[in-house]
Image (cartoon, rainbow, N blue to C red; front, top):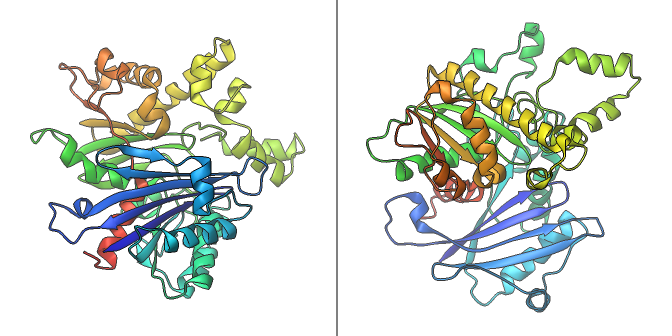
Length: 409
């Protein structure tokens, strides 16, 4: 038996999932993968540092470990990415139900113009990916951190990178190009798009969720979480997305502004006297839902608040989402299915209802009861567009790509 470890590393966290590879025949690649453990090192290098772990089974679902059980396993809070990876690998190698660790798959945000599919990593690949840090300064270094640790600690262990940008690499040229001088375009100043692993999972899952006769050539997926974007998918291929050169573009998010007039950035520097670092902090960390509401970046808190500022933030969020759906429908020449996913998309019925109400002219009608229950299908019988709530699973996409790339099944 083999195991595949999946790592999703952020600035102060490392999420992990362990999949057991079955040698039995299955109807699809996902069928030979069973999630056995998942966990999270959070608050790295902060006083809120924590670790969590859950065991998964078909009978009981997720069974979290207590703090005492974690201590007995040698899993404790970590100060750095390196310490988190070291603790995780030690536990993996000592646990009673261990199998051969066949590969580690990583979420890497940016693949630039070179990496359009999952790749087995070499030291040269890591160097090339590190050179892309300026294109994703808040994400790329953290995604590469555990890769470098494992290359040092376990050089014989195959590592695979899966890229958030790869799913969008086949977009039409006009969808990727800015109206900039050609020499800047040649340097890679393009629309890349992000959240590609989430979109990839949804498009792989649709055939198993939708009725066999449901049209699925023109699909819009709304990945609405603390980071938010949307993607237009034609016949399983991305044709347009709301995020562009960076993950700052498009929809308003938890703390990110989303799209704004580039002249506003110039104004902040020339008339407000803000430095480049101050502008970056403003747009990435002080804007979005947090900036508009002045209360929180968490949609759940805003939905529970009765303040006009919270209501205004929600209304702006939904208005911009509805506008982006209209734009993506234009890129597709219509829309047959709309899918909500990620934290807000999967759980915030009020947000979904507000967005769909503004898209009724596209033939969308909601089933209010199904929507309140977060049911898989939330469109009414009369709706011309299927409307769905499908939980995303980026970790499983990475595990499947490892499975196929390394031919483990």
